[in-house]
Image (cartoon, rainbow, N blue to C red; front, side, top):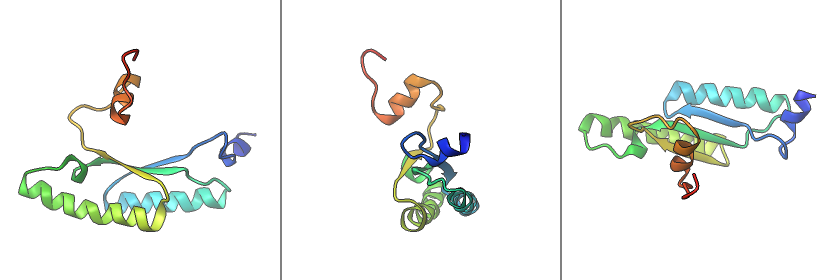
Length: 110
């Protein structure tokens, strides 16, 4: 059944995607709790559009980056064994090539 497929970590990898902000992190944590009650263990978290990971120079954005770091630490220490932080990017990573580029795995054949 579809539920059995979702519960099988060899067949399905569930990724929780959030922003490095208090409310989105709490919402993702609640979703993780719901999934676990259903016997589905999230494989990893992705913290998307991180200003901190983009290493801003502006004082205003640096303050926002400091606030994000608290949420990244919360994800790492309370919710996720495995997580990735994706910086705020100028262009959205749409398409296979851009996703591979983001992952650092672009090859000559791509």
